[in-house]
Length: 230
Ligand SMILES: [Zn+2]
Image (cartoon, rainbow, N blue to C red; front, side, top):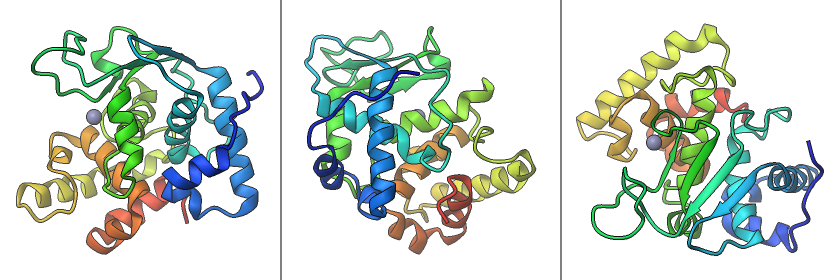
């Protein structure tokens, strides 16, 4: 793995855009910064019809690192390239014209499993308002983790020991019922299937843990265990 790419004023950028970062101790911040710079050096970023800055790359790297910060050896082994489209896109990968509602994509639906696509606009919005529980970068990287066992099914095998799979999936099922009954603080998209549930719940967990703890204490406790955030 290559060493890091220097990002000017990284600490200020992360402090401004990442509530999680604000809670880190000074030593942990240094480690986080270093890993952001290593991530940028080792993944290819390709901008299609748009221009991305080193700050954009740093935010994407930071979003990728949030769920795996307590797993220092983990660097998304499957992922090689991140494609940035200027705007939302559709299933034909068109990012202009009508009916484009995809903000990001990874894994099963992509021909190349080593590629992630992100809408640059959605990516920047995800960080701009960082407490609304919506962040496409965190969302897509959670799908990647979930898919490490070649199955995007909602259970993150690389993070959580298999002995927890039954209680974990049971909890997801219960929480999905709350969404159905309109009794959930999670975005209703989490009700689509367990994989989307995991990604959407993770977004809220990292963007607004207080809201999750208040509304979904059991899920909050479980996700703390998954991401080793105790
Ligand atoms: Zn998704």
